[in-house]
Length: 356
Image (cartoon, rainbow, N blue to C red):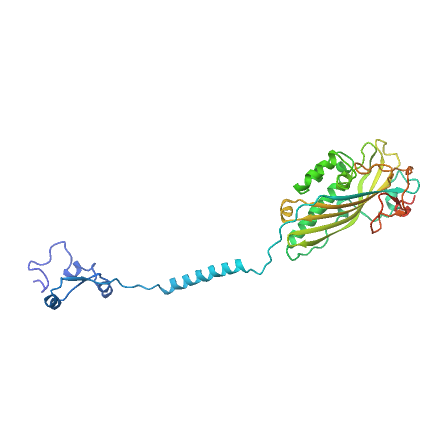
């Protein structure tokens, strides 16, 4: 016999176990009822007010959750901070890059006071000269200890010094440059805005302080001399400093000593020493540092033994062992000593020559 809630014939076969189970998936809890948009009037309300059976309820106001409110506040604070830092940041705005200046160059030949000393043994020449303790090749152009500046990092300062060193090595220590016809190894290191001046210097050389090839690099006349020893001696210094917030400057001061002999004379010919003192001033903006290029703005060169009567702007034509100068100059100038020469042609001090 069935229960009070069961159909008279009992539960149909295959159907739910009871009426309650049949509607178990439909749940009308309290929150569901409160959220309903339509509400049925009571029987008394319908009799008294002749109202319709149902009425529409105003939508419930749902406030932001606490997590959403916190997220909105964080976004607003971050956005306000970004605007404030963009308007009033503590860093100075970098100055505009300076325009690239043309190279200003001075080449001063130094004439010997007597015959140029020579020897068939280049090691003897070096050992008896002020270059006895000089290093060989690029080892004589060491990088100094460097520190960051107010607007340039350690890496940027080292990069500037490295580019300057590379220029010095290529322009004064590459045999194919100093006794040859190659200029590309030097040219590729220059800022593009200086290339026109560089090219004009080699296409139409002139001693006007702007277009002398020997202001850009050490360049001997290959028809007159050759290297008696490819181990060129070098000594000098490099220093970097910040010129302004957008510019680094590197100052280089090096003395190079070459063992030379007459071209095509053979190993038995006497060799002599030739000394070049170069003071170079480089400038770098951030584009130069990124591209591995430099602006060469000052080149000051003293070189000898040379004859003051020869043109030293295009190529250096050294006086070799046993030769004398055609014309002298002012009081002796020692390229191994500090200080600047003040004449267009100087006299090479006897102390700068090897004692043989």
